[in-house]
Length: 396
Image (cartoon, rainbow, N blue to C red):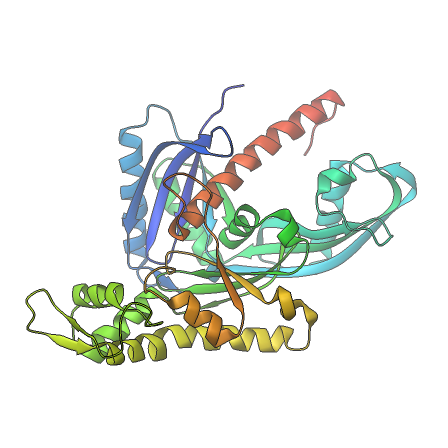
């Protein structure tokens, strides 16, 4: 079977990435084109400038199309956490007599649970923390249920709803480009399943995705997200704080941030930063104070409140499990930040990134996770069609 490319649009808080790719050998990918475009970005309140977003999407897709010989008819769009609402539900369906479970039975469980929620929003994805058959055993993969005889099917289910304005904006832009079929994938869900092993996710796991303008903290269990919060802080907010606090322009703030070391492992608090001409000198102590007080500590305070609110008295965030997985383009923006996070939050921080040649940095996590999920969705759809055709049925 021909290994066809899939098209993805990865939406980050200050850039969009359009990419065509297919599955390679040894869990690698083959890229058939990609383009990154900057735009004004978004906050938890929405896009700062929709026209800027539209221009970036147009430019990215046009650039890839110029060098691609095929026709792009479908795009998988990564939905940032700021535009996703997650609802969890424990749900059970029963059967009049013992039967061997099928994919249709799992779908029926999801459909029935969604109907009971009675939510008017647009559900773009659903996943499971785990399934059970009335006993204490947990099944994390739906495929492990197929063929198992039972009269009862239970699930700890997760439903992902998209912000309607984001949905309408993206669909309208892609429709103008002649792309009618659009699928939406929650970005942090894709990252959690791509970056963290199944074993890690069989217990509670934490993922901190630090972006340019927004940052999200997600609690993962199995193949689902238990809860998630997004904050208006990231590399961009630190740069703004440096510009305002030191009265410098954006380019100079970027230079200072790249030079700074908040752990002081390489830079003494007494060693000043100097520009190339040497006529401007700013103490490291002053720089670090701004980076910490107006940037890193703001993020830490948000995460602390989140953990105190939901996990203060729970074993899940204590002892050897006291670990936060961290990724995103905001990691590496300043030396010593992970050490600062660890000390401030009193936990271990593990940086996670794609295990890929040339793409093994946290800044690539979102796009590669989205590509992996889009390809897996296509493979699974083909597998289900073959199974259903063998049984003479058609999945509706």
